[in-house]
Length: 107
Image (tube, rainbow, N blue to C red):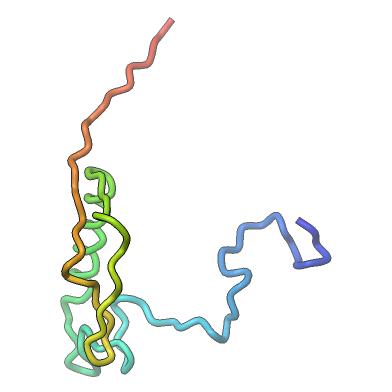
């Protein structure tokens, strides 16, 4: 909280310590020569925005409605040529959350 270390220490700036020149401006749906999941150029997938929204909705649903736990320590990633993929032998346990209602007392 010392202004001698960095200006305006009380303001929320999440990228305060990130070098602006080092940050890549490539998002999930952006087309770029380094990220070819949705193709590149004129023939880039037009459904990439819909696909990204569905993945976000699925993750939000899982976080809100399920408890998740790894079976033991996280398995090492696998490398297929230049692509890093999760280890398929790892197991994740899912348990549906029990809905609880909080009743507020009115007096």
